[in-house]
Length: 124
Image 1 (cartoon, rainbow, N blue to C red):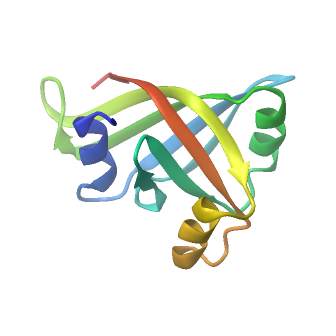
Image 2: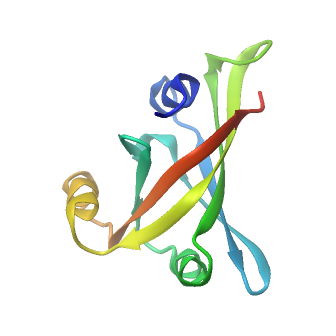
């Protein structure tokens, strides 16, 4: 089950950036999206992929990912503003249930990035 603070960060108030880090042959590769683009499905985060070409190529070699997510409207560890680092595995789906879920809301998506969160650490 996802950490309740993570769900709050993803679903509360104003939009904020979410960063996905994959491991490529030239080192880490980062791609950004918006918290409001994330669909929560059990322990999975489903994100529309418009581009994410390098991300997809990296996932074919190494499916581990790290994410950074924050929201200034959520109470953090000491002050307003919460952030988390997430660790898990990911895959790109160009058809199937995850893609259909995403494509209903984001017609421009060519695929769905499906991230299974295995561990989360609150950093803010």
